[in-house]
Length: 292
Image (cartoon, rainbow, N blue to C red):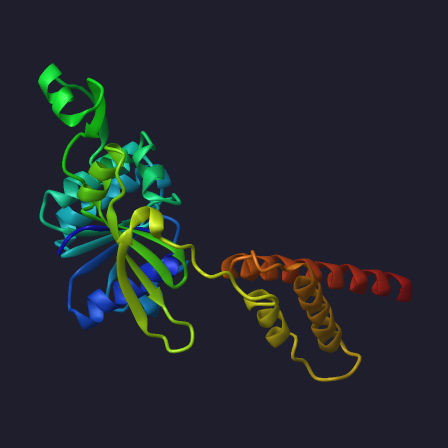
């Protein structure tokens, strides 16, 4: 199986670990640097299935734990979250050359961001400046100095997750070569229908990929708050907290726009909820002081 790199959130890694370990019966080891995959605790969360989790005591030594996982645990699959340093990129190259399937994530919006990142560009083969001969430059119709891919990519497959249900998959070698030559590569777009849950797979030119549909007005964020605001009627603390959450949901509806993506609305909702809870605590402290 090919190594796969995602621009993704942690939820996908949890599901990947469970499917590979439980359903495909693979030996999976998770290198969990921030306890976001296996949970915060000595016992990993059951959501990762039978995959083994290796915690990283020092985030600066994650590359050492990655190599240790391959040498000591004999995994078939290694899952790494947040590849961010040159040492970790080199460890990924080492793991890939040892015949172990590697699944990792890196921060970035598009493939071009990774190609321009001097620390992580080796994950997709690296970029170097090459001087062509007169005949070669004339045949290509380019300048004598051009940018080319340095070597084979560590991750043959790169997946951009632009939304919860909207993925853009690259064959890294072809996409990097095309982009360096000023051409648009052919990519695979996978989009899940929100109503039927069917996955639609299409192949299009990279510059023709449409952005995912924005969330409707009053989407996920306000709906989450309204469901959390279901409290029994009355004048007690629970009823007041529910009223505060409904008020936040109303304000979120008024200030949301059609351009706000679903995940932004959700984050806005979470922040607003914690703010409302802090305001309630301040009011309760004020009342208690007056009573005394």
